[in-house]
Amino acid sequence: MTEFSELGLSPHTLQAIADSGYTTATPIQAEAIPVALTGQDVLGIAQTGTGKTAAFTLPMIERLASGRSKARMPRSLVIAPTRELADQVAASFERYAKGTKLSWALLIGGVSFGDQEKKLDRGVDVLIATPGRLLDHFERGKLLLTGVQIMVVDEADRMLDMGFIPDIERIFKLTPPKKQTLFFSATMPPEITRLTKQFLNDPVRIEASRPATTGENIAQHLVRIPLADPKAKRMALRALIDGAEIKNGIVFCNRKSEVDVVAKSLKAHGHDAAAIHGDLEQSVRMKTLEAFRKGELKLLVASDVAARGLDIPDVSHVFNFDVPHHADDYVHRIGRTGRAGRSGDTFMIVTPADSRNLDKVLKLTGKTPAETVLDLDWSQAAGGDRQREGRSGRERPARGESRSRNRRPVEAQPEAEAAAPREEQAPREVRAPREERAPLEDRPAREERAPRSRARSEDRPARRAPEARPPREEREEREQTGVRGFGDDTPAFLMIPIPKMAAAKG
DNA sequence: AAAAAAC
Image 1: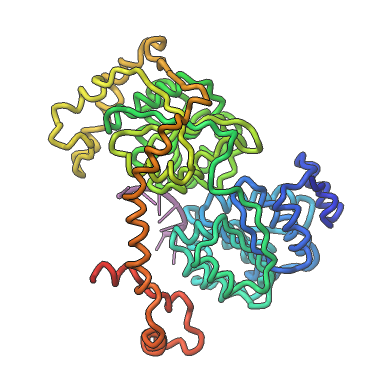
Image 2: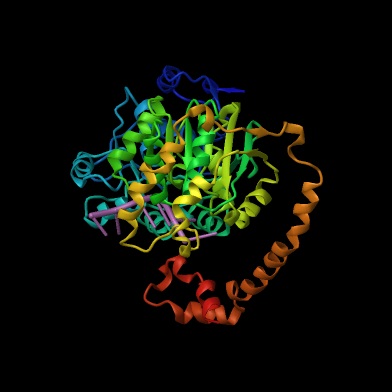
């Protein structure tokens, strides 16, 4: 246990920390803060929920305490992948830099340029931004990055997922090479490693990541339902919610449209729920999140915008309305609960159509979740759809007709009636005792199925390897002839071979 | 398959 007072922070900052109610530092804070205070680069391998935001804001505040920034020339820069995350970083500065002269500005999309420009003109010490809006300001000539002394990249691997790496490279190149860089990523895929090698200067590597597996304090439940039908899934979700003692919970869906439908449906059934996803207005996103944080909203229905990074203190339940497309996302989603050693319950609704993604999830977590059985009358769900079974039961109507057709019936009809008497609706939940959760026979059976996927994973590298790493002469030729006009300054990302396209054509 | 992010 390391106290903040041991880390070399100033009395003023320590007071701000104490005012926030903290005394002991998290492992990443204990390791990163002293290093960052010396001005060295930091490569932090840490997931969210490890306290990494404070791990870089605190030393930044200290190092920026002396000196002032000029107009349009921020002295430091924090890049985050999502607006909410950037907002959280801003909140951290607001909290810990209070009483100092440090000024900061939040540059994110979805809000007007005016206020952001005003702040830039006045001069800010800390710029917190998402890549798109930052570059937008830069291109409008509102911003110079040549005065940046400290640059932070938060959740780099997520930026990679979101296609931001070229932007990040560009931003790196707009800042002076002689600066301090604090670089955080939960994982280190090759692309990220390459980036750190190119732009970090002899960084101190600090690891505070939990393994990719899931915490012991999170009880994972699997809810198999017999039909891959959204209505049936909503029935199941309601039954789960009604059958659990929820303080607050997040319901994750794969699609934004589904988020809207599920949120509406829950509200129509008397639940305290609201939606959050990337198509909603920024002000609404923030308001909803704020209400959820304050405990004024019980159920947050979310796309994966909320899966990672968001600072939502303690959630008692996570519901996976859909099996996520990527197993990683599952880990992040359920990681919204069971934080700081508390216990959490998670439920995932699984339909016969989800077996593939489910396999991937189970393989990654290495766990066999408890199966929760819902004793519901599924015909209620199937009934409404039966007459249009021609649609392969998926209920994905063509554009145009979808809205008017789906909306009302979904909310108003048999479903609503089905919910009427609560006692009847409550799930007859048959929960296996923990020890019995993973019957030993189950494991080998699952293992035996593996050859199929193993065969796939074996031949995949074989197919990709020759593309990803062409023979030397070819590479040199490409380097000489493929990209022109940059001289020695060719951006590295232009030199990356594009295996997928080649493979697809071949 | 989907989501995220700039106007």
